[in-house]
Image (cartoon, rainbow, N blue to C red; front, top):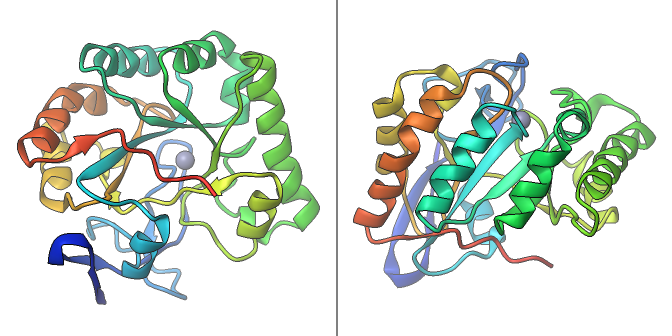
Length: 250
Ligand SMILES: [Zn+2]
């Protein structure tokens, strides 16, 4: 199913209308795509987002946002940070509370390097929406607490639900915690480990104004993502987009 969404400058961006279903393992955390109201996966589909939701993010112009999920990871997060620093590029890091507690020094570095934090829950439960509201709230609260303890003064600004776009069960609870919802419009599918070139190609072909690009620095071996990152940044630049425009906060 496809939707067309008019964006600025008369551009029409066709995005694939998918809700993200979730059967993710720890190694494939965010990308089990399925059609709306469907539990069937369609992992071959390159990205998931409704057209209307692109506009709902409120991003304008030629900016695109890089997001890195499921860290901090002791190997790959420093590598990603090094590459982003070399290119003077900022990104949003969606942190898992359990990882934050294990690697507080990496949270400190993410913040020190000028990146923005996103709360990606304590345990990365792909079935978060099925849990009682108080448990959902606890998943969010403990992650925010872990971030504050790891890097005093730092706080997550955004919330991203594990393994899918935010659901109606979860969104109001995240907003109660003062977090802005952060979904994505371009799924790099880096979790499939298709090779660095393939990861870059998926992104390059899906770029659009206001793109929010899903990548992973944690949750498994992300060496392909690290290898791809310089080429991803080149592809974004060569296509005339600016990197690291973060979605506006409420
Ligand atoms: Zn995730």
